[in-house]
Length: 291
Image (cartoon, rainbow, N blue to C red; front, side, top):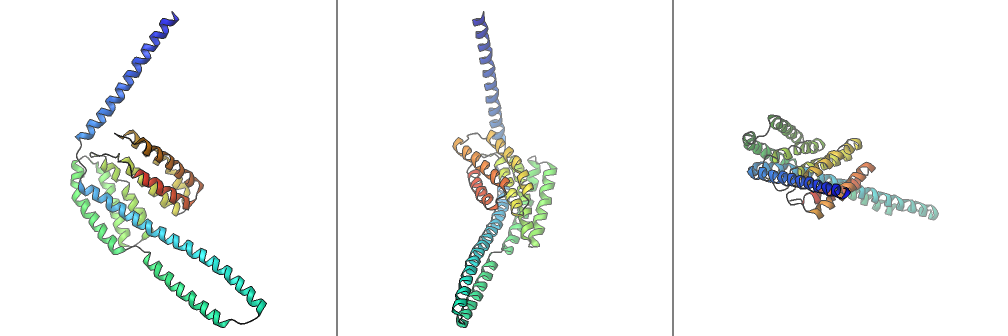
């Protein structure tokens, strides 16, 4: 009797597993068929995404270079001050005037200050280039907007995107670096929703991860650590959704992203800006390899 009961349970279990496997296969097949029925990505949309991403990366590159220069200047200043102390101690012991050496030192300081001013001038946004880019972005949107409506983009999405595009245009014309960076990433958050209307290889949630990652870094740079940490859960959800939608997942790459995301989350919670930048860059590079 016990043996018969075990056999019956085994049969029922096997049947249940087969049904679940069949349902999963049917679901995956349905998603693939639905994907095949969609149109290819419009070139105007891909160009818009690239332009916006390029703006974000350009501003962040300049900000990183500027921060590096400040660190170098701080380090040099500390070494210089240490040297001055030694000089002063030596002067006291020798009790000899060193006017010639002081004059030379003053000239070197002046030259160094001038060089730093030139470098600081170079580390600014090329606003003329940005004005050309935002004009091109507005023209691309004008070209794509009618097609977006035909392809099923909700009115609220179109309205929100256009409002954010206007905000980005205004911040660029006002030449406000901080607000331009925030507005550009604010615009970037809408691209995954547009991309989801079309046939694609990499899940659109990959771009959603990029948005959250960039937004976390922006908040961290501004010292808004609570806002940065609050976005980690959303980024993790976007990644889990992306993995579930992959047609041919690269398991090795996905595992690297899992670990990179954990490392990034940890340093955000530790409120360490330099590590956030480093771990964020590693995570972004891995995410962008998803095809």
